[in-house]
Amino acid sequence: MSTVTEKKVFAAPSLLKDNLFHFCPGCHHGLVHRLAAEAIDQFDLGSKAIGVIGVGCGVLLYDYLAIDCCEAPHGRAPAVATGIKRANPESFVFTYQGDGDLAAIGTSEIFHTANRQENITVIFVNNSVYGMTGGQMAPTTLPGQKTTTTPAGRKPAGDGYPINAAELIASLKGTAYAARVSCHDHAHIRKARQAMRRAFQAQVENRGFALIEVLSACPTNWRLSPQQSVKRIEEEMIPTFPLGVYKDF
Amino acid sequence: MTEKQLLKGSVALARGAIDAGCRFYFGYPITPQNDIPEYLSAALPAVGGVFIQAESELASINMVLGAAAAGEMAMTSSSGPGISLMQEGLSYLAGSELPAIVVNISRSGPGLGGIAPTQGDYMQATRGGGHGDYRLIVLAPNSAQEMYDLAGEAFRLAFRYRNPAMILGDAILGQMKEPVQLKDPLPPPEDKPWALSGAKNRPPRLVKSLYLKDGEMTVHNLKLLDKYNALKENEVKVEVDCPPRCGLVVVAFGSCSRIVRTAVDRIRKRGYNVGLVRPITLFPFPEKAVRQSAASSGRVLVVEMNTGQMVDDVRLACDGNSKIYFKGYPGGAVPTPEQIEAEIENIMGRGGLQACQQ
Image 1 (spheres, rainbow over the protein chains, first blue to last red):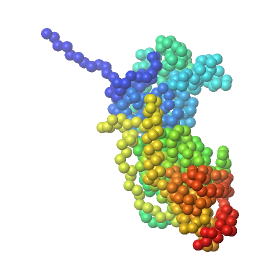
Image 2: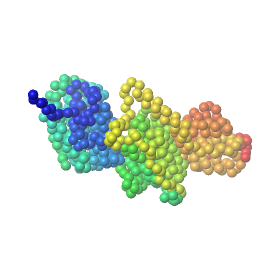
Image 3: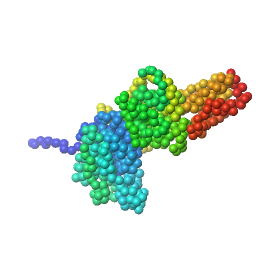
């Protein structure tokens, strides 16, 4: 008789709830949620994490992560996070924002929060389109990309160029950490995991403002299959939004 | 601590907030309220508090929202255009049931308007100037003492009802210096089982105003309505000074009520009875006091430093049962007691005044 010893080598993060995600097939929000949950676990922050959730597809984060959460008005998550963190410096405060939230309506708040060296972590999901409202042009929409409000494709003259948030935030003196990662394959997810940990570490060590921008797929509003969407990130998004660590403490 | 000091209204208010336990201020400069942030930028750090000059009023009100979500006593102050920008945040504070104080040292408008004393923001304050079905608690001081006292009262009400409260003043109240009796600090607000602190040894908490599921929002709106009805039932504050056989009751609030007070006193010195009703809470509005005073005199004069805003609430309170007159001084025009005295005489006529002789 031989005995079989089981060794657990993989498990869901402890804070990830058992609820079904409302996200569309091929959407990367679920992955980003998981990476955040893993980082919370790694630094043992479950009992002091407070998520500030922007308006967009990520707004229901509190249905999936078992932590304290606060909704913020569209674009204002960094200001709300500032209030929470100043009121309770012992807590771990992160925002979860999409591209419309952070790079259009919330540009003022994100810039000045970084500039004040607020000790918070920003998780910025960039999928180059407004997801929840049905696929309108985002500040990160690529030139030529067709959306429901740029039916002929985005024209930089008039519609504007895509905004590179990670680089802009890295240029501010108050920023401790700024990086752009992608979730489109395993190798990149591993790098994203490392960057997420680093962005959390910045706050744990009181280094100041940290931002991680995650390139993410929105197959539904891109009118592409999940496989085609992954290819689009690789071939079209990354050339416009180069991956890398733009600032590190 | 309980001494008397000669304080400017704005400083009295700021001091009152600190004595009430407020430790968080977030604001953006705008005239004529800059004395408040300037005072607090030194006074709050001195008591271990936090002062942030934000990049905009949008940021200010949302920093207030964050500190309130963490259970702290937080406030901001502004004027006209800045208060307009804060309406989004006020709606979220009301929807999320968070306590906070917003001070409006009003300026005239619309638009950039002017900085002279005015009462043109009554509607914005009392109707819930942001989107959705909500109300603010609105307090209207008329002296430096009340600027001090009502700061504490606003925090008490905001925490008791978990609803944002506004203090509505103007440049007269902000700038004039009067003796103020300071008070002992208030005890901190009771247990806050809703405040975010991290889910340590308890289930996670959620501060939100999004209700998408079928019927959820109706339930939430009715819950808020219960709160507004409880405010109307329990928290009305009003000064009523109506002697017997009043031929006329004058209704005025805030700085304007001080001028009306002088006018009414002058008429009374001449031997005629004219009443004065001064709402201190604008929401909840003192409907009953206005209705009863109006019913006993039959005639009401509403005096405001605007083109006619509170007069609508007076009409609603009287429900067609009294004759309502209105005299407005908009755009920074401040009436003299003589002007108001003349207006009262004009309405009453010689015969009318004699009928209410003392």
